[in-house]
Length: 241
Image 1: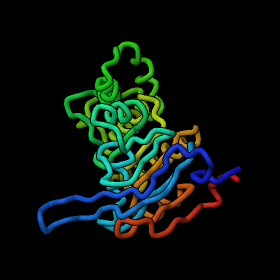
Image 2: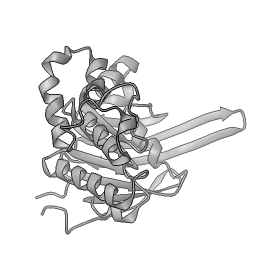
Image 3: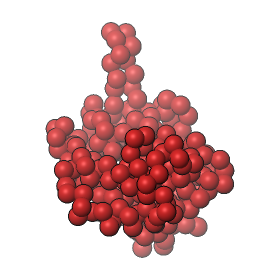
């Protein structure tokens, strides 16, 4: 069996991916300086690197939250780097799930309503998806908290809501940006165990982290430096052969 991320039909492929921010006439930041990598379906990839290395920038590009300045990003066979804003929004809504360090829940909404948010943006009839959303709340251990608001939940419970929300559109890829950064070690481990189970069920995970212990859960670890891939490490104990 090919190593995840190295087969001939990758789910994600980037070619000379570059991102430059022009902040003023004399303030140009080259956040990405030509990144080439690929990720196969079902992989679990961690991206690490110091502040300013480009790891968050690449996650934003993979999540179609931004466009590259140059280079290509293929999601399956589609070159999403050439898409307009409406097309990118469609890709985000139907093919990508997000888990953020700060949870990004809406304070006025209940657990169930927060899980439903991506569906609202898609303009679907929420009644058709209510059972699925309840099932996702149960999956993350919050079946008895459906009517609670974020202020009534612990940090770990809020992150569980974010995990459920990331799954509601049955995405191809889940992107996680420091998902345990605001959690204590015990709660962080519980959230990572949940992410591990999602990967075990076939979800593709790409996770940004500064924590070696978190990265060791992944099949591959990509180390970024100065906007480039500095090195990659394959965890052969976790990677199927």
